[in-house]
Length: 534
Image (cartoon, rainbow, N blue to C red; front, side):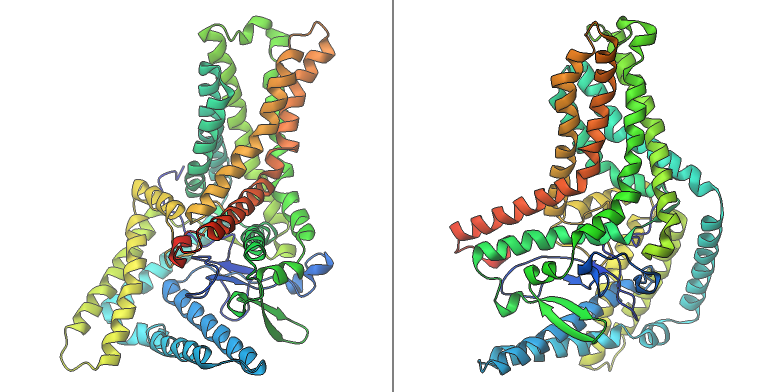
């Protein structure tokens, strides 16, 4: 299996905006509150009638596209364009209210100037005709042919199903098998919970790297976007800043009237509904986890057939049998769940607007890094030329800065260990680089912390029932009581735990938002830079 291959970070829970038609959402970078630069969250309504809880028709499905080779530049340009639109909207609103427009005009002028400087460096004509030469064009053409052919073969081939099975099985063993062994030998559920949560959080990038393809579900993608907005809305309400013009930074486009409004977090949440999104993601991403209920229930009841001493936790043989058999059952369940989830997502892609994204192998990342390195050499050569005007130098420097980010990523993804380290760095960094992010790799410290909280909380119902009732029930003289002790804990673990792991994460993210609001109120003198991570 391709456990050692890199992956393309474009099958995102916060997908890239299509350059012609907006997708459901795009979240990137810092979620600062008041003052300073604009927020980096960009939102579009999932559909024009989302608030009515209606399903999403095929004609309303958002379009998704993979990040192209000039993706870093395109994302910067999209952000600059959004800042320019937002500054223009603020100027109009302040002018209508008769306020002082001096600062708003200055902000708009600055945004326009930034847009103008960047637009030339993101012009494909400038990139591919001024910077490229015959050798770089040939390298790009070879790379693109190989990448297109690889995607076609991977999507149409059957090996992607084996990769799903391997990713699910290995992922389950790392996420929960190791914690099971730790809990069995330590005799402490807390040790098992800690190991499981840490392993689950940091093993997810590896699982995605092992998959040959990933099918996304925009319902789940967009549902997770709401968690940051919920935390932000509560924070603004506690601070009393919700009505400030600088916090109206979330775009809402009415497709019927083609009218664009800028809303604060609370207003945007009021116009969307979580129920339709929850139902859409629950079908493909949550129900399938009941395979765990069946598998763990079967492994729990083995002492009924092999004797009570089979899982004798007072001996190392019994501990090994208990942890090993559960880990093996979890391996099988994880493999089936991973494959089943992607089959379910693929079966409703036409309805949801999802997309199957191919994992980019290390060999292609290496060729991409080589091509970008050639471009950087070309830029250095251009900068060394005499007679360049200031505008040309600024454009080349901007282009070089973006390509350096791109090159660093491509180099890292060309090898297994650096690729995994790159993913972990993204999970722990305070600001996101100019790259897309996947649903399983949060990309900010507080997002990762919220995910950590959600994963830990989702395991507690099963642990509580197993510790309080399960262990006592399995020692009963009544067969039906013992069978209840075998079956009920894993059923509760999924029905009231794993199936609501995203909701627990939302609660965790909201708690962090409330905590930040309280901290700000208590420490009002802290610079706005202090909340850089949120």
